[in-house]
Length: 136
Image (tube, rainbow, N blue to C red; front, top):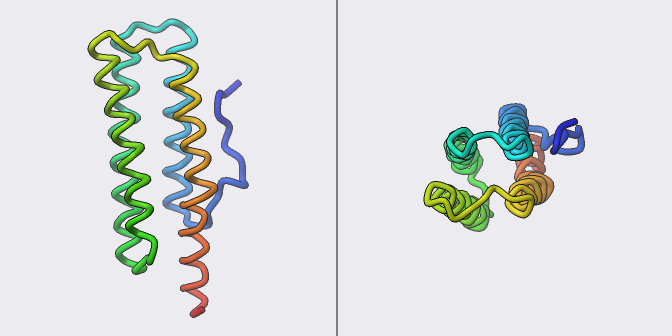
């Protein structure tokens, strides 16, 4: 059973973003499975690196859309992105130095932040785009 299951309620109505969110969830699940099965530290580091890289790619996609749609809450949304990236980088550094065991607390942070962000800021952006497309 997946650690984090995609639910239709996570859809924000923007296909490219929804697909990228699904991929992020897949990588979080991959990381969880690696941690749960006691996979080697190198494999866990590689998976966390994969999550970091894909997160940066995903955020860049969103940020292009913010500019395209002249999203008024871009600054706040970018601050959330930066905070998450900073935390993931911290996890990477600690893991590579051997001072972080990928714990359930780390996994809970990744899961909670991702879902909270999708259901909050990303959904708000999706609603903004939908209203904009309707000319409101």
